[in-house]
Amino acid sequence: MLQTNISSHLYGFTDLKSLNERGPLVISYGKGIYVYDTKGNKYLDANSGLWNVCAGFDHQGLIEVAKKQYEKFAGYHSLFGRLSEETLELSKKLIEVSPFSQGRVFFCNSGSEANDTMIKMLWMFNARKGQPNKRKIITRINGYHGVTIGASSMTAKPYNKEFGLPSSEFIHVDCPHYWKYGLENESEEEFSLRIASKLENIILKENPDTIAGFVAEPVQGAGGVIPPSKNYFDLIQPILKKYQIPLIADEVICGFGRTGELWGCDTYNIKPDIIISSKCLTAGYFPMGAVIVDKNFSDKFVEVSEEAEEFPHGFTAGGHPVGCAIALKAIDVIINEGLLENVKQVSPYFMERLNEFNEYPNIGETRGIGLMAALEMVKDKKNKIPFEGHLNMGDKVANKSIDNGLICRPLGPAIVLCPQFIINRSQIDEIFNNLHKTIKDIFS
Ligand SMILES: *Cc1c(COP(=O)(O)O)cnc(C)c1O
Image (tube, rainbow, N blue to C red; front, top):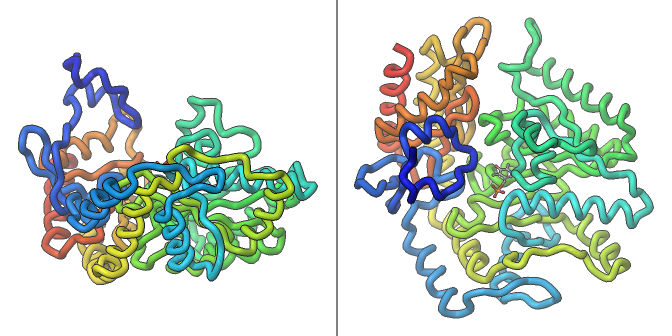
């Protein structure tokens, strides 16, 4: 049994058997890319908290800005036409750094809320434009979009069956992971062509007039770091255009530098209509989500909202002045303190060290881009057969790794690494030397 002080917390996304055996890891503070537990042990957190703390756990500039903003104006909303000046300033900044030349931003408190907000915008818009049946949302298998009801339905992971989701308006199509889903003797280009043409068939079968949007992460993150197969986005974008289906880029992980460009859309030449942002937007220092809408759609949406009198939606803490001040600073830090540049610079070395792991008989594939990577564990490398679920290899690796001083998260059969944008070469060595040790410990 857990001690009462730790058993009063209800643990989400946590293997409870392992928790009961080991207890939680209680973190006291962080410095740079390291965290320290309450017993004084030091860990390199190779997951940037949860993909989001990208500028260090103790960035003095960010902390100063938060303190100052608390002194200036410590809390407000952004509804009924009232909002803080920091909220307006951040809206302007986000459009400026976004791929859109003009547009508008809606603020909420998480990536999930941003996705649900986006769905409500599309549904309201289509209904007001005389297309009340244009409601279906297409996402991809292994896509992760969050945990609110809409976002859960968009997330194509088996665990959402626990909640009776997805609901019927959500369609899950092929995941562009060639290693896993490519057919024998099929080239990567042929694979992309095949799943793109399958997408078109599904659109036709469902009736394009019933489809409100196609939502995709540039690189699937929580699905196990899956960069798109060759030509994938070049092939599907003309299809979406042909049937006038808006493309929504869920940039919650990729946005603000993770792939080595400011946006995953820049990395893969994606031209979205709407961008969903969160995680690194505040460098992990404040809960915030944002829906960034291209002028093309935002103009029409504002018109429709005027007809309805308002967009009847909003969160009490959305556009919080402290969050906005922090986000403004985080964007400045990422762009002007060399973080984005550093991702570009160290990424080839990060990938080089990652690829060493291909030599292990129980690592089937290594993959990644920028500072996001995965190692896929297999029982049978030749036939790409994963370990049985009951062996819980993921948790074994995660626990062993923590015992060795490295925090890295397994996602199903994949070990995920996504270190902070400030990481240097010797810290990259530290991650991979440590991981070699763990892999040897587990598989020998
Ligand atoms: C984390 C994540 C979300 C959900 O964000 P929360 O802040 O956890 O609600 C949505 N989309 C993607 C791609 C994510 O990685």
